[in-house]
Structures are given as structure tokens and as C-alpha cells.
Image (tube, rainbow, N blue to C red):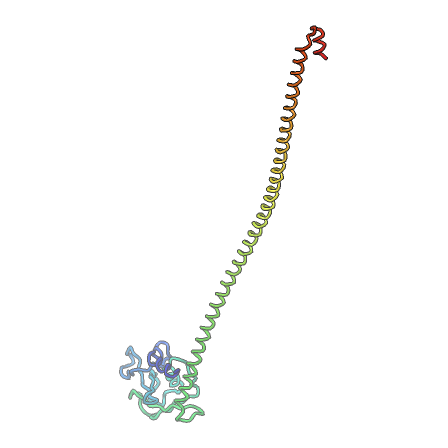
Length: 257
């Protein structure tokens, strides 16, 4: 799957721009071998490694024949064909026609590798390409993991701040609720004492009212008895006055007596 992805990406993207690559490296594509030194476009030569694997090489003024091309230039141009960096120190390029002129526009090279058999060279290149893509994906995965960890840490910091604020608010509300409960308890105690005092005052008032009513009743009874006694004494006095006449002096003395 990685090899297919590498091939698709290589076909989608140009391997390198002319400005980014060294002077002797050119992207793979149609080769312009004509023109003069004064032309705007540089002269390129197509290097064929296999029927399906080729790359473009920008010609240098000092190159006249295929044997003049340095192997390092070939190696760098070959690496510029791929979108990822490869380890290419072990790769070697041997031209099939060293004496051929560069005006032909196309050179055929046989690619080799140190300590690798000829039929496994391309496999080693593909293996290096797979390793490069694996390293690239692992680096991208590490960056994504670092971003996730950073986002997680930021979220944890925000969560800690929210938790701290909630705890502070909870402590403040708990203190206020405790104060309100204490105030309510004191109010309930005062209300209980006031109700108790009210009941005591009501009982005392009831007792005072009952005793006053009883005293009034006794006074009324005594007053009635005294009124009856006074009436009877008046009747006795009137009867005595009617039966025995007396002088005013004796009557006055009797009255005084």
C-alpha cells in the first residue's frame, strides 16, 4: 500500500523545480535538447535507467560526452525524481555508451548498488523508498501525536482551571449556606423563646383574669349582703322609731348611740 501511494504521489507531483534543484538536476519530463546557450530554457538530457524509470538531467557547459557526467550529478538527479529523500550513497550509474555525444538527447544507464545483486537493485531502491515514506509517515504521526498531546494538555489546563473555579465557588457558597443555617438556627431559637414567653404571658393573663373575675364576683356577693343587711337595719330602725316615740334629745342620743 505504501509503494502504491509513493507511485501515485510521484505521478501527481513534480519531483523538483528548476530553481530548487542544483544546476545539474532537472525534473523528469519532456527533454529539451535543442537551442543555444542564449535560450531561456536550460538544456536537458533524458537519462533512461529502465523502460519505465527515467529522469532528466540538466546539462553543464563542461559536459561533451556521457563519460564527462559525474556520478554524483546522476545520483542527485535520480533522487530529485522522488518526492521523499532516499539514501543513495550506495547507488552507482554505468553508461551503456560512454562515448556517445550528449546531443542525442537520451542516455541509457545501468543502475547498480554496492553489495546488491543486479536483479535486486530496483528492489533495494523501492525498499529505500518504502523506508523513507515510513519515516515520513512516522514523523507526521509523531507531530499529530504531539499536537494531540498539546491539545489534551491545554484541555487539561482549562479543565483544571474550571475545576478550581468550581471548587472556589462551592466553598464560597458552602460558607454562605453555613452562615444562613446558623442565622436560621438562631432565629428559630429566638422564635421558640418568644413563643414560650408568649404562652407564659397568656397563662398569666388568663390566671389574672380568672382571679379578677373571682374577686369581682366575691365583691359583688359581699356588696349584695351588705346592701341586704343595710336594708334590714333600716327597716329595724324604722320599726323602732314608729313604736316608741321619744324626745328629740333622747332620739338624738339614740341616734348617736
